[in-house]
Length: 490
Image 1: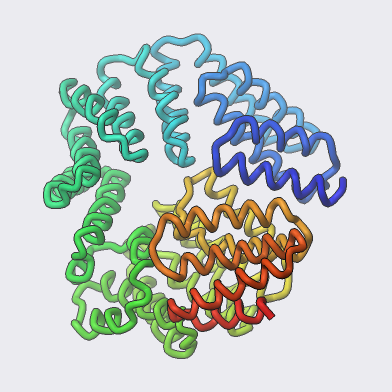
Image 2: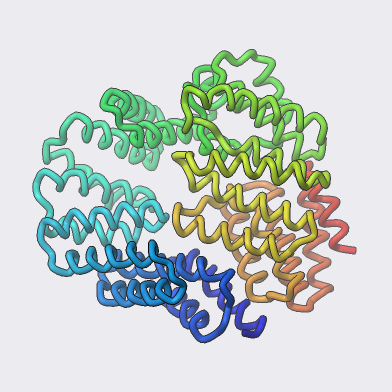
């Protein structure tokens, strides 16, 4: 297998996962089967085929899905993976039931839709939910309409969501389901710009969820409340009373990282709730980290970790991975590689338990890629880049939490001559920069583009983009990254 074919395979994998493209999945699988990739890529191939089968299944191509699952069975048999083979046989049985139709199939279509939602594929989820509605019982119909509304809102389509919400309400939901409907209506209000109404609905939804022991409903409502607080500019005072802080709170705060003095004022205000204190210490530590004020950042991030640890005893799934990941990032930047790995291991334990894996895993693998590059191992960094893409296929994508992987991954691919993959990450970095305001995001795009040009042999163009990246990072106060980019431009 030539390096060019390996690079082409991973380029198609990246496109397939980002665009949810069945054609790109099929091409990548074909390239893999035509070559010899070795045992170290076998697990990744299994995941790829599973993702492909799930995509086809949700789209209603049951014959194609069954074919992909049979391919998985054959590959598992060749590798003696008994558990994978058993799972695949159960999957084939599910596809057979789906093909038969009827009420039993409706329940399975709903499960398929739920899987697509978790994979960040609202289009596939809607296809599956529509199939479920064709033969669902009246007692289940309202729940599926509610899930359809939520999937449409995740695509910011209010007009398509509203009829499903009306249908769900008309079917007489029980109290717990009424609470979930309130949560979706809160998201609808956010889309319409009614933040006051959205907050009232989300609070009521969370109260109902807690009353009925609906942990997932409580997390979803908490996520909505966090978003509303940031959109209204009221996230600072709310920190005083937050009962829990999630990875999503930290994700939303990334636009505030340049406000070092603001973060200091938060702590000086004497926050009452421990979660708020943990959040504020992390925010200050991140702000200092970006400015390369290593010692101060280390103290703040360690304090945040200690506070979060004190919460995890009573609320295991309430811990947050980000402060440990930022500590890993800091350690990597100053060359403390063993310490970086230790912090990554602790963050992995938290990520395995988090109710918000989309944020935790994206940043974890991106930070691991940085740590590998700082150790001088582009091959390990590339494995982490692929892990980010795989995690996005399973849990959905978060542009801000995975942003670091674009310039770092582009550098790793450039160093091993993988031109197509470096260019794909440069495109991804441009997409991120177009989604968020700020010179730091633009600098990351310039850096990724510089490495893509370098990989293609355009040294002059690469230096231009690296100089632009250095200027952007400097404007954002990110000294370490500005110096790194300036060195790349030499």
